[in-house]
Amino acid sequence: MPANPLGVALRNRRAGHHTLVWARPDLQAPENFTLTSPAFDHGAPIPEKHRGRLFGANISPALDWTRPPAGTVELVLIVQDPDVPRRKPATHALTLGIGPSLNGIPENALADPSPIPGIRHGKGALGHRGWAGPMPIRSHGPHAYVFQLFALDRAPGLPAGFALDEVISAIAGHAIGRARLDGTYELR
Image 1 (cartoon, helix red, strand yellow):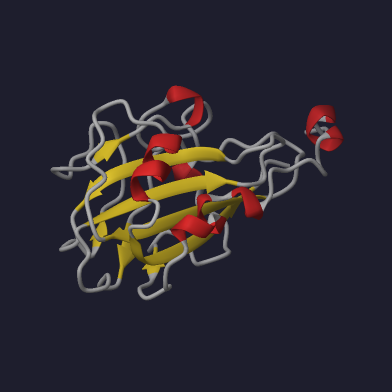
Image 2 (cartoon, helix red, strand yellow; image 1 turned 135 degrees about the vertical axis):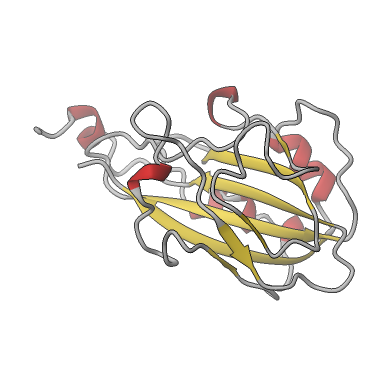
């Protein structure tokens, strides 16, 4: 397949890792637990079946984590792509209500509605709730998909229909731990 001229033209335009929620000063916390996936290793390509719904099955990958720090009341998962050719990263999952007693979530648990009781999704890519798998511009180069899991000392308590800015405001200053897993995806 020939290169996509738009992807080639925008190849050097990216939001950047400094725009991730992970980089915010008000969400800095010890990296005191780990996040992994049986579907891919840190820094490795995300399998095709987890690709966005326009071209794939759009099944969220299973995630596992070690015990979050003592005092964790809730876990929040935010998945972002900092390589989109915009000023801000694209949000591929925005999930609240993950219980601290869980040590992971199974494949497709980020579906909306989630099969896991208590899990709620906010508005992500293009207003979509739940998992919105990788869908980078063809020929733009590799994109990172950064899974950011925050352990909080209080529940955000947001009503349905929450968006990223509301989540950031609600959790700022309440992260007592965090873990990160990066996957990649590219359409050549």
